[in-house]
Amino acid sequence: MIEFRNVSFAYPEGEDGGLKNITLTIPDGQCVLLCGRSGCGKTTLTRLINGLIPQYFPGKLQGEVLLDGENLAHLPMYRIAERAGSVFQNPRTQFFNGQTDSEIAFGLENRAVPQGQLRPRVLETARDLGIEPLLGRSLFALSGGEKQKIAFASVYAMNPAVYLLDEPSSNLDMGAMEALRRHLLLVKAQGKTVIVAEHRLHYLMDVVDRVIYLDGGRIAGDYTPEELCALPAQKRREMGLRAVDLGQETPSPFHPPQAAPALEMKNVALSYRNRPVLQDVSLRAAPGEVIALVGQNGAGKTTFSRAMCGLHREDAGEYRWNGRRQKPKQRMKRAGMVMQDVNYQLFAESVAEECVFGVKHPDLALAEKTLAQLGLSSLRDRHPGALSGGQKQRLAAAAAIVGGKELLVFDEPTSGLDYDSMARLAAQIRRLAEAGRVIFIVTHDYEFICRTCSRALHLDGGKLRNDLPVTAENLSEIRAILGVR
Image (spheres, one colour):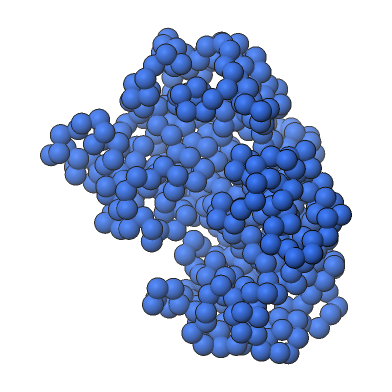
């Protein structure tokens, strides 16, 4: 049993995510969803259970967190790790090896499990989770969804009593999300305690037993899934919560642009590490369009978008802008990209500086306006490295907007975003489209597509399979492509 007894925690320098007067009991075997706006304290609560607070993250802690009657603040990390296993939002941050089998066995090795028992346990783990094809692979060659499966497997192999997952679906397609859902049902059936901090709620409504809603570091609601789903949709949005049923999401009105196409691609072929990825891709895009790039993990969406920005050289074909052929360097000057892992593109010492980083003559008024529109003004003096995952996503988007690029590409921009942040970003992208930008969004997020996009391009099997307007008439086909249940 996990108990929080009047727990408060404050990070240094007033960082978001603290907790105030938390009293909570989680019985053994219960599956609990922690939800709420970014910075409400979800991740902090999980860090108190796995011992990262106070042993790794400093701050002021009051009250007690007990696991089976023992105060976790007084237990060494190895004792906590024997009972609680964590899967982080970005699985890359918890890997210690270069190969999948070694990573799954890593925790067991640290427990001094005899060598002869390691391989059988790795094989058993892979069989239970259905990930045998991932054995013997380089971690660096895996997709985001595959890395998440290995991170989960490394915890499962140690057979902890408590599973802690922080935004586990943030970079997953629907197929990988369904696999995660099955894994959670598996460990729940084994009697494990499961705690999931998550913004995407829809795939968990038939998994969790209980929903804890946090607001401003306090517990503001304790629901059953049925009670949460019974709340009016507008009420849940006011609480900062994403959709609980994707089948109820429909497209927002979008007026197609009347301008002539600016971007034209003809018979483009792309490869990655000498392996063909896409063949014979042709399309046109006009200023004002917001185009979703959809398809399974590994379909080539990121390679395709990097090539549009001049960051990946094509094997064949050509790119034209307003009729003129564009070489990679020319495309690089014209395009801006928000990467899936935004940590690769944050360089400055503060949020305000990052927003104008690399811009020769920045429009400071536009920068301040953009920060305000994306809900970042209060963080303008904070170091980018101290932000949450969702805040980093919004900051990278702000920098791309202020850069004034004509072509913008967002790669999974809603990973780690609550409803409020997702709605702000969608509104900002619509404003950019109205201002004449051509915008592509690599995404698995059906809710965001409905709110933001005018077209959906489906990449699969090395080809551009479908080019669909995002309208009510095409929703069933788009849902089928995305795997929306």
